[in-house]
Amino acid sequence: QKEVEQNSGPLSVPEGAIASLNCTYSDRGSQSFFWYRQYSGKSPELIMFIYSNGDKEDGRFTAQLNKASQYVSLLIRDSQPSDSATYLCAVKKDSGYALNFGKGTSLLVTP
Amino acid sequence: DAGVIQSPRHEVTEMGQEVTLRCKPISGHDYLFWYRQTMMRGLELLIYFNNNVPIDDSGMPEDRFSAKMPNASFSTLKIQPSEPRDSAVYFCASSALLSADTQYFGPGTRLTVL
Image (cartoon, rainbow over the protein chains, first blue to last red):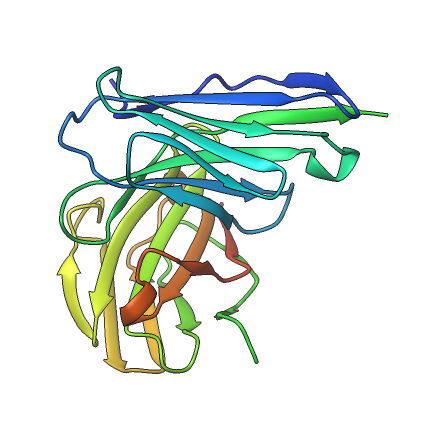
């Protein structure tokens, strides 16, 4: 069982809608959580990180963390076609800087 | 300011050949990471360095893989001998000490082993 799980999608949402991307992780001791965006044929790019339970907002993006449920999500408000990409959830393995990545969720925002 | 630089961008080789991938991290960054991405396994960390010293190599698949960082501005990932199952995109990333959680990825090297 992979340590970080994501639905592969594709998740299709209309332009202007809220896209909700979900991720679960198996290591209850995990402390740091990350969302990366990867356009087709490009390298991953960090969007947000979250360390504490609750919500963290940055522009149109909101990361939500629930450590009790071992669940982290990313909400994208007012989705745009340019948001169409694969979104990777990553969890820091321990006190170092090694990351475990999920396989990603493909998001398609239709005009 | 230049980002992470990787070379070559594409590599096609035959099974059994030695392959060397190169990475130049962002100047001043203290951490360097090597990742491999495939459709089957997703993005996996192979090894990372702090100040040129390997910290965690638990992701290196087997002895055919080796990584070095002889100085702060250069790292190599070597596969010898290469096998078709090594075909993947290999990414290098770097981060700074005071913001080590923010990793900047290079453009990747697409490796095809025939």
